[in-house]
Length: 224
Length: 87
Image (cartoon, rainbow over all chains, first blue to last red; front, side):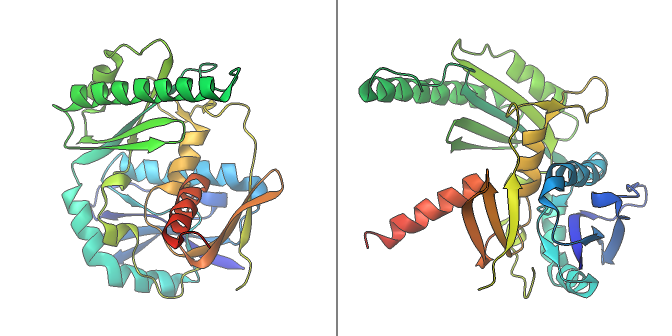
């Protein structure tokens, strides 16, 4: 059974070049709805779980190819539509809200940094529960303090910045102007990493964390 | 309600194992980061999904529940349980 897999949406520009193929080497196709363009492929569904990682990399390749040129609203990999009509209806219904977000975010990309315990330093092998809890509280404080330090350093560059606590650390999502990715990395790389912590920097990503709620979770009738 | 699609999370030797997808001179992107972003960032269409690890179903996300990653799903489930209160 085949389904329509949506990759991402962007605002039309004649000079944007698109990848020929996407997930499972399926041709990448375009839906045009006013100034909105929506990329999709017809894929066999459901995916073979053994191919999930490969599919993820191929999906990522399509989105990144467009992101290098213009702002995109990414879809999530496992979201598929029954057929082209359902996807076309979706594009017609949501073109306005998608275009508004893309216009707002057109000059920006999302950079990220994750702060987490250094390998082997996570509090897991303690002699007692109390010792574990003390160690864990200390680690969380260290992570919070370091995340706050990074946040302060990034203030001049960040158009918007959100911090999310995860099970293993803190994750910073930073909206920066397109073209300032290297400056972002340089700012963070000049912040020494505390002995017991690790830090990872990634990006540019689509500004997914900064999409409006109506774009992130559109109401869809009958989507599979 | 019909069962959803079954997704098996494959073990990775290292959560931050890197693969090279970038242009020369750019940083490498880890497979975990890619999977996290493509499953967990962006537009959510309602779906149906079973997420399992090592053959054990972890989360069943129903037709009217937002498609989500394991971490988000567990957070949502905890939040829903807290809202529901003691049975």
